[in-house]
Length: 207
Image (cartoon, rainbow, N blue to C red):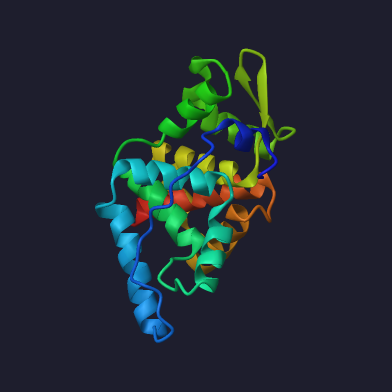
């Protein structure tokens, strides 16, 4: 993912925003879980929109799993799992009415045609599921579809369609699949479907 053209074209620096208490060797599992939930609640409710936008980009670039691994190795047990963070970011973005914004940004950054951005999430899904994994942006620009971007597009399509039927997958299995997609360990087609299912689950949960 880090070698994709998307990674080279979008903003170079992405601010990390999930805060938490100072690292402590005495932190218990229960305390860590409580801090992780507090971080997720902050994503869903109080963190500023610019931080949510930056974190969504981190997820889309496939960087969040490594960020969590590195953070926890440094004693930051309060960091939520990548799947939980990235889904919460998408839910918050949906609540704020900004799901399409990422696709407008991608098209603009990559020199595509602005007219393609509205249908880009669906085009990404078609490329991932039925095509050769490449999607046209207009103006002669074509990009590969990496797994984390396909996941984001799947969530976006399901949520904006209001497709609650997509949310029937087993939550634990879907979380494991989501982690694999965000870590670029699954193919784009599978990850579009996983994102679509997460979008459906968010709708079913009334999020």
